[in-house]
Image (cartoon, rainbow, N blue to C red; front, side):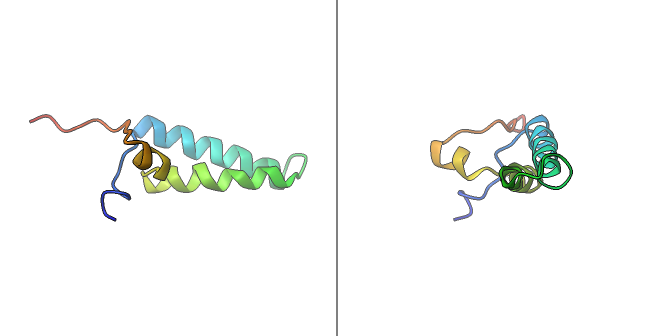
Length: 68
């Protein structure tokens, strides 16, 4: 389970996810007030947590590996 929830997002990836999540949530509350804006919760939570379950399932990572 720890490998599934290990950090696999780069800092830029995380920042973009947080911005996208907030923008989508703003659509739900400020803009046209459509329920589709609540989808912004997904990128917001994954960006704040630094882990993407889909990346884990596919074996992907945008996080830089520490130099050895």
